[in-house]
Image 1 (tube, rainbow, N blue to C red):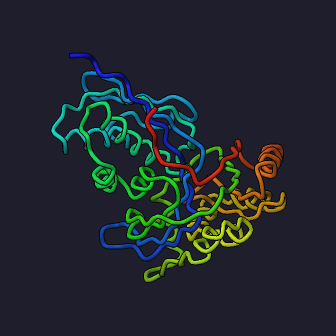
Image 2: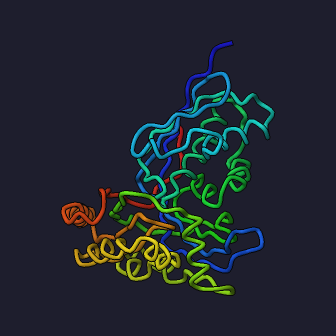
Length: 299
């Protein structure tokens, strides 16, 4: 029989335009009300025919990504093989552009891409709905990373409802020199708030997206985790202040941080803000992106 050809999947980063965090649940997760948007910063995941199941990582901060059984893309491939009864035989190659431990779901994106790539490589023929069920077992952000676009996330973030978003939005992504631990950030918000805190609702963000109103969206951006992230990494405050002073319509920490994101009026304004943030040395580097964009695609 012919050897299958490698399958490459391009998968976008995500930003939480709104992240409302409720109380900690008995299972250790938090109830969330969040609005996801996929951004045009991409990892590439390639599934190669190979004996056994291994992973290799190249690109930005590749040395910070585990290549053992804790790697989320590797776990995704193993789960797909287990549930479909095929041999777990592939070499998973990841080329990183999404910040590592940066609050933009880089690991979850790679897991979603690995599901799509290995499904194609192994010919398991699962529907996106079936892949989404596996994605939800792997992590709270993985189902959205499989879907892309814009969506409202509830539960622990894995229950998705598509969201209407008119037009495109222009973003500056300010990447910090070192990552933040998501569990540590959630532990810090629990310590600061105590039990019983309710998630902030996303009504203003949803209205701004429906209208395609960038100014209104900038004013509505919200992240309940931001005070906790700044508490653990005080330098983030200077990054956010710098972006606002440069004319960003809105600024916030992305997810659990430490990446900060800024909404700009236009692509040209985003380029100007990104260059100025880099010159002011308030972050390691910057990227310009647009959203929303589609989810993972083969080829």
